[in-house]
Image 1 (cartoon, rainbow, N blue to C red):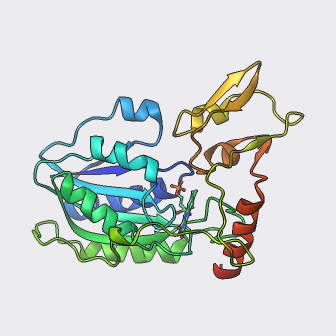
Image 2: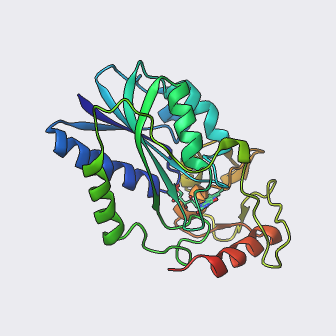
Length: 258
Ligand SMILES: Cc1cc2nc3c(=O)[nH]c(=O)nc-3n(C[C@H](O)[C@H](O)[C@H](O)COP(=O)(O)O)c2cc1C
């Protein structure tokens, strides 16, 4: 058996967690691991199918208490096994993972993979990584994760029990005043005087929604608010100015401790 880590990770937190889980499980089994990302369009194009021999470590970030809505179709296409076993790892920013593990369990089962264990791990919140769960996952998080890895029963046929249900829908973000925050249509805004036209944002967008026009990025319609473009911009030329989005970050500041 080999360990196969599969993940979606626009800002790197999920990747870090999945790689750690794979390394510990591989060491335990005296085997090797490999990683496959389905974050970027190019990565999805060259995704190699799961083989019979793979024990699957699937990691996904939590968006609005579920897995990223737009990533579900990729998961359905790529997370396809033939009676493989695996584990689900939800990576969240410290508010809550709500129904994400339930959704991951269901998608694994639908894809022919038995989830024998599941866990949720805190990572810095992509909306404001210096302020919301900064530095997570930290040393203690990683130690706990290692301990969890040592409990995984590779040969179990029992589907893991997880909290939540996909019938319960998505988390609805709130503004600082407690009213619903609607930033579904928000997109990053570019400070043209700072942009040097390097195109890193174009290469980091999981939805392929940024194109270069006249040497400056233009944002097309589909934005999943993952923050990959914003956090990867070497000139800090991109930001969200949507008032509901900014107000939601204020609200998160009041509920997420360090
Ligand atoms: C659009 C969006 C929605 C999010 N929703 C939640 C949430 O409901 N609960 C939570 O605790 N963290 C939430 N987060 C934080 C992410 O789960 C966290 O930053 C995660 O590490 C991102 O994964 P990545 O670093 O692999 O991109 C959200 C982040 C984004 C970008």
